[in-house]
Amino acid sequence: MVVNYTEQGWEIITQRAHGLLAAQIAMHWRKQDRPGRWTETLLAVADHDDAQIELEENEDLLLTPAGGPTNFNMRLYNEAHCRRLLDFSLSKSRYIALLASMHTVFLYKKEIATNPLVKPFIDQQLKNQAQWREELGIGKKEAERIYGLLEWCDAFSLLLCRHEVQPEQRTIQISTGPDLQPYQLQQLPGDGLLTVTPWPFETADFEVRVEARLLPQLQFKSADEFKQVFLKTPVKEKSWRLSRAK
Image 1 (cartoon, rainbow, N blue to C red):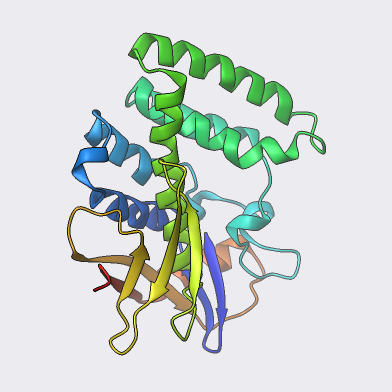
Image 2 (cartoon, rainbow, N blue to C red):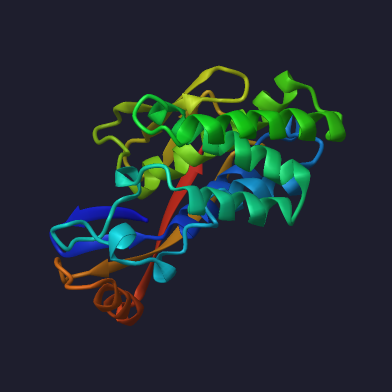
């Protein structure tokens, strides 16, 4: 989950909600540059964190030693989680599994030097990816281009979820897109609209949204207590409007 500390308490956005926001962003990508398997691509973007179901996790994964909610970037490689994600993905299609597998490699390759379990996992994923690309008739370069779109939308969603839009019209880089070009996010003056430069979307103006919960309680004795408070907390919807700069 994405955890933000605010004056009112913990703002919690689940991993699945963040994935849905990423898919909303992807949905507006310019038509001429969309992959041929567009529906499956959108599903892969939406589902790239689907194995993270916070209400099914225990204290070790859900809470920090201090009793606060665990932010997504505090979590390291977890074999059971990765296997579940890939099983979920493969049950839909090899194409979705290919993109999910590429995402796990992107996330955990940095742990090869510190966790002996990571390299065998990644080696197997690279073999799986080669097999799926051959079966699907997709070249490695094309697969990397498609995954680049998923990674870009993931990064964009996280910027929004983590309150990283910069004030005073300052820019922040989202990521390099599938075309390997850097894209900048900026708040437009006056009306609070956001823009992306260069503009990569089909439409000139659209809105995206995500569901969040604001938990005033800062410390929890157990995962069960956190889950109870989480479920009782009203949902609030956050939204952002994006517009091509004039």
